Length: 246
Image (cartoon, rainbow, N blue to C red; front, side, top):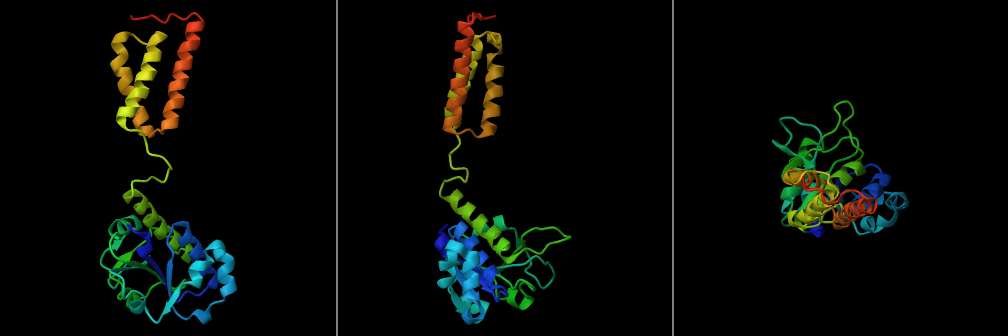
């Protein structure tokens, strides 16, 4: 996925401040192309900038259009966001994560409606599919910038996944590397007579399963290894029988 091909379209937003907050949400997720259905002169630039903070450049470079069709004419896919279902809504509304999985080729637009009314049936008809963000039945309306943040976040995550990166900032250990940590643990437990020799396979399976679910980083594995090695060393210095093979 190329995040430069993602386009956020705001259809006649009411509040300049909401536009600014939406710009910030976009910048948080490396999405920078904003299009607005409406007129630039209808919005207070200063109010936009106050909420956008360092993402004000996104609004400054935004393009304005007469309608959704014009705003998405160069896109291969256009997704209208809606929280309401009905016969006049899109037949199948995708979840944000489902949409992110198919938004990987060509230029893709995500359209957000007015804060008060959302997208009308007529506006949704200009979109090729619908996306719904699950929310409480008692209070389902999301702030515009929050909706933009959720969609952009899922696109950002999908891009990280496709590029082989993780949001946690590290790559979990492979099982072959994890086996070295398991060997370190069981070697040192055996030295202090923690288990009978015949029980080692069960102990190895336990630690391998546990640590695999923990998705350890390299530094975490090394810390665990140092802990068990030091434990066995202290036990030896304190006169614990380190030769038990029972």
